[in-house]
Amino acid sequence: MSELHVEAGGLRVAYRRAGQGPPLVLLHGILADSRVWRPQLDSLPDAFDVIAWDAPGTGGSGDPGAGFGMEDWADCLAEFLVRLDAAPAHVLGLSWGGVLAQELYARHPERVLSLILCDTYAGWKGSLAPELVAERLAGCEREAGLPPSEFLPAWLPGLLRREAPPDVRDEMERVMSDFHPAGYLQMGRAVAASDTRELLPRIAVPTLLLWGEEDARSPLGVARQLEEAIPGAELAVIPDCGHVSNLDQPARFDAEVRRFLARLA
Image (cartoon, rainbow, N blue to C red; front, side, top):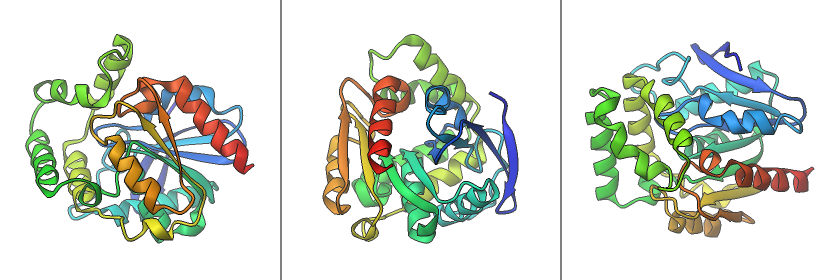
């Protein structure tokens, strides 16, 4: 699928788009870009206008300037949706993208029809122990200056379960190998500083929490935290599935997305 481009927030933003119907916006995690949504861009356009962006600092998008924070990504995303005539939208975010989805709702609730938060956090600061946040941030700062071959092998076991098909592991590694060092560093700093715990009780749109049962980076305990805090939130757990659940178990992932959004329709 060819990549498209639009300007939003003063930056070139790349994206992929397919299908017709209610807008469904897909927000990827750190060290990734819109290519990780290949299964969903193949399977969901029969029912939705599926839009997967490359967050600024990833893929075909421009790099943000120094000091760009999660609120800046959210403002850029809000403008992006307007430029594509895709607001309001169902907003699905995985991992880092799930934190961005929450920030979008906090700053631009009129852009959001529903939230699907997948294998994510209330920000690293909001969900993880301070020492783990510091460890992850130090890792981002170190790895941003390294070639992918020197640090990606240590990442993959935390993203996909051991039994994930080799072609899926290879696909994830190819995408991650194209990371932007400056973008990776800014994204790591932004999510490390994020804490959405005060927002969670104020979320007033239908919310699905979609989690891989074997998620090693954002364990089910984080999902339970979000489920308890967000009014009416529904938790769906995918068995035999790791952190990047949309690639690890795409059929089950897509079935849960369809079920949730069909109920809203």
